[in-house]
Length: 385
Image 1 (cartoon, one colour):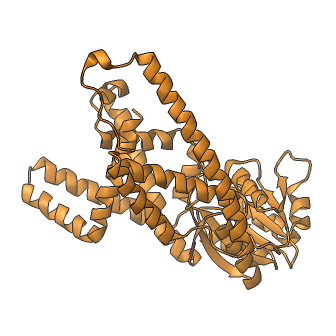
Image 2: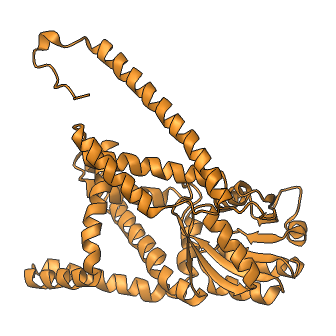
Image 3: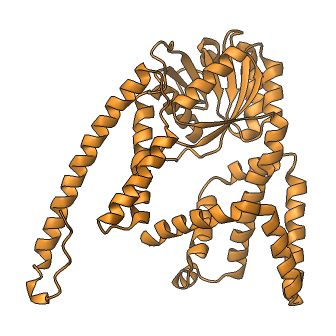
């Protein structure tokens, strides 16, 4: 059916309550269609599990995006909006397939997984991950009925999910209790020390992990997790399969490379955020006043800063103070800040342009997708303010 242009004569426009009721009716129809789509996704998940097919089909997703953009545009709809809508729908579809264990082979044996520190945020996240995959999960913490020692001795898989500063002590304590035929792993954001402790304290298989996301994420789909293999190839393969089955992207590396790179990804990022937050507090300009004049970029920076300071200071202190690369990274930050301050103070436009060119060259081709991706984030953020 051809779309009809809106009436131009105001006398022909129906009353607003009627129009809103009609919109509500259309929305109910859309929800019914999404529910039908969701039921079909459930059948697809069963088919993929029976035929050992991966959840994600990148070629199929590209085909859907291109077709929905074109069809939407032909109907007078914004193609960018159609792409955003269908990317969200496909994300939900992948999450549903993962929840239905689409990538978990039918013949996988359920295991007993003990989460030591299972009442913390990441502990609960890990418990849900393994529970969704059909494994029996034991939650052991300071005040649980089953003690960490008992859980470590009983389980096939022992996950250490405690604060960074006590991780190695806990490993040294429970490591000897873990069965030689079991798997011992941690989830800390520093890897060199915990890996050495697990290998020394236990004869079990060992894998270090670092989920590159927080426990409050709405979905694990597409989230990254680092693996640092230590000992025991069969258990390493099992863990890879489980994480893939829940929709996670796996990065494998050594503990040393992990800590070196995370000094940039985490330490530099958190340090920058903390300097920004402290500067805002020192300047003392009322937050409400700045929000009246906010740009989208300022709002994004402010949201990330407020998110950071809404969380545990002990967590961020441990991340930065336990990484051996922190002194070098923070020194480089301070030197860069001083260089920029001096350039601005002497109003040296040539030096500023040279600095811009240097950084742009380092970022390389990444600047172009960065413009597109940040435009997408800005559009979504503006819609919600």
